Length: 434
Image (cartoon, one colour):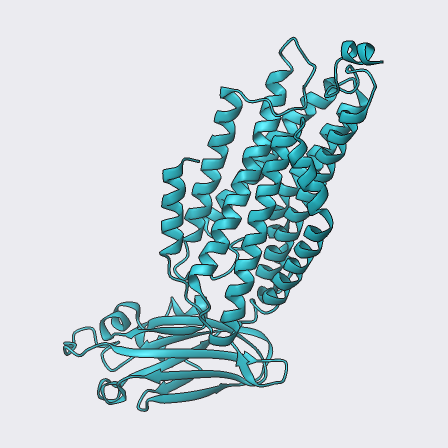
């Protein structure tokens, strides 16, 4: 990926808006008429003590316009088929905005239920009426679920609850693993060797994933208090995750294509190293650019931006991204099958098979979890996919780390023939030494 493209990506991500459950904006009569009720936000309430707080800067103007806030319970699809008057009449709660602040308690929810808020006034359903030139109403809408103590102070919607704790545990696991393995990994990287480039890419991808988890944790910690969080930090989390995924894709495609091309060459002394060529580089860069483009498209395909991981979105680019991962998994399976089926060395065959496990886990975890999430309740699906994909990709990195570290050390100290252990010194050097 070129430097200019990376700069463009950063600028796009950092300039995005992320809407939380503390929503601030403008309520306009023209927008309400055009949409048959101006959409404000959605929130999934659960349990008891749900609360909605609406604050206005100009309650007198709201009274003059007959402004009201409409709350609908789990009626997203049904509202589109109704006329304007029928749509407004279907609201479970109608809040007339005549005061600067209004609190609305949400009845007990036996199971998590999505509520959406719309704005309407006296001009919404009067298509031929002239709308006076009033200023739009400035508002703040706060939506709360009950916290562990039963108080309505939790800004997390039901489908978001638990993600904050997950990222805390993930960071704790990263910290413990770093304390244990930092020194041997640092020594392996300083020493160099046949797997040096692969280990550098793996370490970079893992560090980016750790940065993404840290940013998500910081953003969600702030979000739990004010319902808005730090959109800049949330966008950074998604950016680091995207760069990590593109780095891993580049590494896997480069290795597989490079190994395939190297098998046609006469010298086979180092068939498991990172074999760079124009063809392998072009394939790897092309796959990385396509994935990056789909990730960016997916990020901005929804009308309401998500503040956390985007693994579970069901938009067109999201489905195309899943199809890309399945296609790449099939491509790698075909390439690796050709290599393994013609490989005589047991050691090399085991190496390729273990590498295949790490690659397939990385590529197929998202499509498989996306399909499995259909059996879960609506409020659990996004968490299942987000947590599952993050854990599976971390496990995939661990598998590849173990593979390349153990093989690199084994080939370095082994005194066996280079025919069976391709990355050792040549037989001539061994004979001369001993």
